[in-house]
Length: 121
Image 1 (cartoon, helix red, strand yellow):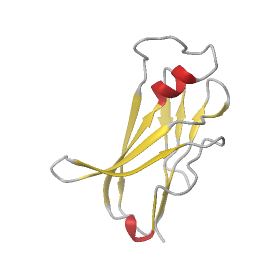
Image 2 (cartoon, rainbow, N blue to C red):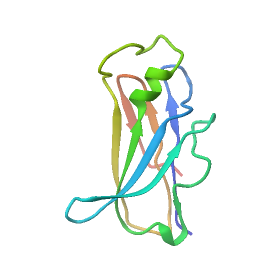
Image 3 (cartoon, rainbow, N blue to C red):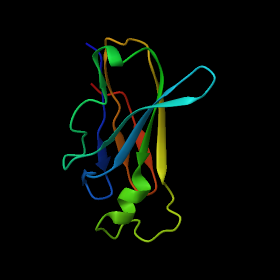
C-alpha cells in the first residue's frame, strides 16, 4: 500500500520542528500545481498521519512546501530570530513517485540558513 510521509528536524536547536506548515502539491506535465494536502508538524516534528496513502498516491511529480520562515520567526530561540526577510522562507522539495505502492518518506533537516532532504523509509 502506497504511503507518503514527512518530518522536520530543526538542527539549529537540536530538536524536532513543531508547528511547521506543510503543503503538498501534485505537478502536471504542463507545470501546473494541484494542491493535494496541507498539514502542520506536531511536537515530534511529524505530521499526525501520512500526507497520502493507498490509491491517493499515484505515480508522478510532487512538491512539498515547508514554511520554515514562519517557524523560525515564531520560535523562541536566538538563532535566526529577527531577520527580515528571512534567508529561508518556504523550502520547496520536488520529487518523483515511480512506484505508487511504495513507501516514500521525505524529511527536511533545516536551520535558518540551510536545509537537506533525502528519501527515508
